[in-house]
Image (cartoon, rainbow, N blue to C red):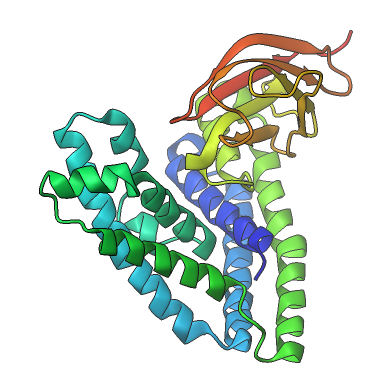
Length: 311
């Protein structure tokens, strides 16, 4: 299963959860209920095909064992590090390791691995030494073991194919299921929610965001730009976002198109902490420039941009 397919399925699952969470807002609308049922069926189909693909790859048993090991080590170190951070009033470290057990045993392999990697990065080096010195139950061997199992899970995700023909067939089936069933079901649900952008904007935004197919994990996002129409508040997909500021080579702008959900995400590696100028352009809309957009090293900045249509 490719990273893109994993992210598609995760987005479908997250969107389905958001639809259910706000069911009191949407009411008992039969057409929306029908669309959600189609979405759930598409997710089930994709998960079944993904499982068949894993079996064909011949490493399901080993992968499950490695994921269980990753869960135990990642969760244990995250708990200890969070306790330490709270005790010394280090809010930055506390934010970096504030995970739930579900972060290590639910979701895609990629997301579980990214969560464990974030914990490993947060406690490695001086932090681990300080924790050991302060008497917390963590050793260099514990941290090294977490790093090792992260690498093993990463290796599992790219293991050689045991049955090439069967794997190719399963991969093609999964690809078509994602494109033909899951994507259409997701789009159908989002499109049907359009009127709610005027009447229940917060719930609309939360649900549309849940359907976003992420490029990077949420904890790794420095800046999320969300572009919408200033009258009806629905999203403007495929707008062009330009960013200029510190950390960007002079004369060069970080440019990206928003997704069809009107979102453009920038990782911390791309945007060091500082203030930036953001320019948004979209067909049929007036350009918009936002100055002094603050970006931080340890949290995500959300920038909502509303565009005005050209008269």
